[in-house]
Image (cartoon, rainbow, N blue to C red; front, side):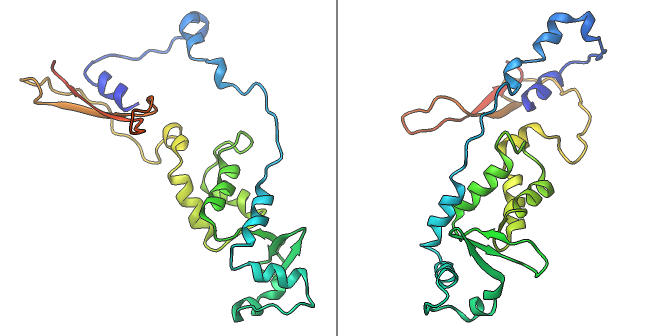
Length: 215
């Protein structure tokens, strides 16, 4: 988009609307059929099983063991014992109630990759649709819980490449203006990144391009 804006900024033209019925060929080009979801096959996610396995290597292992076998003596921290009544274990998953009237939610262990997997399934999958920050948080918080979860969601949305490309900027853009013609070659240079290229020997898939605006 930035390259096109830079290209058209050098021209003084007027944009006029022309109905698609009168501009059939161009109108067809603006409707790529491969962008439309033709078929969706829903597969059961292994997410819950990954969470169960992650408990074994987390500080939550003691809580899971204590709640799964109440008669067994398990060493817990003072903080865990004070909040033990808020936890429960159902089918190997640890649930937590923030308040007494809330629905129990699955506790996600302190595993960065696993938490990103939860956010990915709530935001990036075809059934999720790249919702905004608040809606994504509501979707995640409906079933899952971990400390500072809202901050995780906010950072994840801010760094989502698809959202940055497609969704409009929150602030209004300045109007396009014509750029002055440079007097000499390489006095004025435009630059931009190109990504998703075939990887080179070092695994790099992007380049930085410089273009002289005169030559």
